[in-house]
Length: 199
Picture 1 (cartoon, one colour):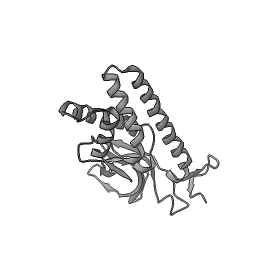
Picture 2 (picture 1 turned 120 degrees about the vertical axis):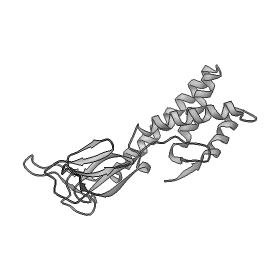
Picture 3 (picture 1 turned 90 degrees about the horizontal axis):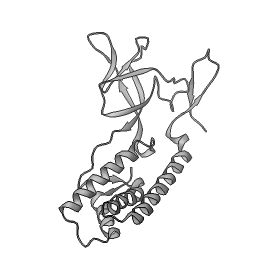
Picture 4 (picture 1 turned 180 degrees about the vertical axis):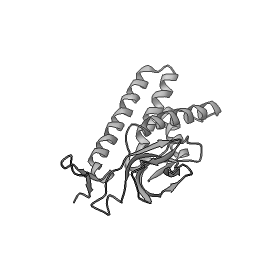
């Protein structure tokens, strides 16, 4: 994933906001606004930059429950085999309890393949911020800044600009959708759902 340094985005904010320097209060505001806006954006789409396929081994606990153990990412989908490497791969039912991915008793495999999304964690000074959201974040943070400074007109303009950047990001995701997830071929209800790679 391409990233930009936290400090670079902070400097862009300082420049566009017209601030000669950022004092402790300004820096605190920037951090709070950045994380609030980034957390919201994180959950608005399954961004390609934040998802990947992972193969996870399964183990049985003392109650004979088959599971992965605790995972540190969000699980979007689960297959019994690699969906891009095996045309007979099937999506399977699962349950997540306390970050542990549990399989149904009927599943007999020794591993699963999951579509995993990185969990959001707060960004601090020195962090690397996802660059695909850079323009959205800058306008959104400026909107928060102008709103707090009583500059309603400028806040509205930046908020609208931020949403325009977000709409462009959504369009990009839609164009790349076939690369994000395997195409699911639906057959008659009596047959299993097969997953195959688009050509």
